[in-house]
Length: 497
Ligand SMILES: Cc1cc2nc3c(=O)[nH]c(=O)nc-3n(C[C@H](O)[C@H](O)[C@H](O)COP(=O)(O)OP(=O)(O)OC[C@H]3O[C@@H](n4cnc5c(N)ncnc54)[C@H](O)[C@@H]3O)c2cc1C
Image (cartoon, rainbow, N blue to C red; front, side, top):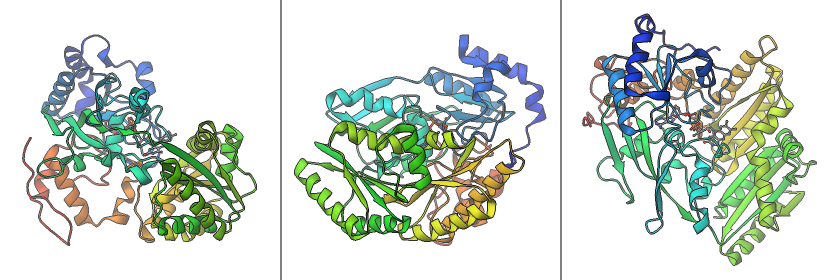
């Protein structure tokens, strides 16, 4: 582990037992877990190279319990790390040695489905796929579909502003959340938005979405649900080079077509997925696009023909359209299983997440090839091609001396290159601890101070998820007021909730 976490407070560690006792008074029964063997399952999230036992784990089941835990931690200056299902790939839910890990898995109920208003009100521990399962019988679904959707929680999705293969057309979590309830570190319950579209006043809902557990603990989410499209068909398009696939993506978008999803995989990822899932992918291509079109049948047929013609013009050697719902699902199953599939061909992999302007794809791919040689490590690539969101999977073996370090340096070089070509450090996995120390590559010290002033308006003691996102924490009293600076959007002092 090469990331430095804040030094644990000896004072907190020294009074662990009294903290556990106080939390037990709030959460009777099985709501507090403090035995080392029982806490071990929580010591890591999806960024498995990083591990840390928490001070204690709490599993509240009511909003009131969440509020009382947070009030207690605030009064006693104890850090708190919120956790949903623990699938974060950026170490967002990594525990702190002197911090309470607040796990929301008991908040697992769908509270209301309002078909008339096209929305569902759910608790934060409901899985992403659980929302679709709850409404699919009536022909509805929840659009953002991270590959981890079977496990990840909607609360985690809100905290990370998660995306998925269908976000190109239907938007990220931020575009599909209508309202939330959250609890501040001081234990106040705040509601933002609701079943209606635009929230009144400042867009605090937008601010909370993607805030990585640093501003509050989400206890309820109202999401938009959509009616399933009349028809959805996917097409596999294989190319001799990644450059041609990249050109094809640009040409489809330039033509004004917005597919429901447009994903790209390179040869190592294609082979790993095909060996694992037998999705029907061609093996003799260097790059594969999966393009899905949805809508009324006649429109889908028309768009499929247009996409096929664009693919032809860009040198595609294989085009295969799904002819049944099972075949369409199978095309996606390969892509959605790409991470575990790569896990079968390497003892460990490190999943990166950067976003670039689409036209820079050839340059970034060439850069990755050079880094692969420099660090002597293989890389498999999957992309949300339509969004320019890259997920290079760096293959390494943690048991081999120095390989983890080389993998991390390789990943850092990729992210630096993403920023250099005009992109950003993260697409959908968040900053967490993983990209925290790269933030200065993208933001000036002034920018980071501005961002911390927002954090201070919610959490002036830096107790919520410290050590994540910001490479250095400044005392709120030293940061002063926000003001407009260098064209950045700035806020006046935020109202207290
Ligand atoms: C195999 C695999 C595939 C993946 N594919 C995708 C993908 O396609 N797209 C994508 O976007 N992500 C993907 N991810 C990453 C991950 O699943 C998402 O970031 C997901 O949103 C995390 O949800 P979670 O419930 O597991 O959150 P956790 O990992 O528990 O927490 C993530 C962050 O959210 C905070 N948090 C969690 N719950 C709350 C809450 N109720 N209130 C406040 N803060 C909270 C935590 O503090 C932490 O900072 C993938 C992960 C894996 C392992």
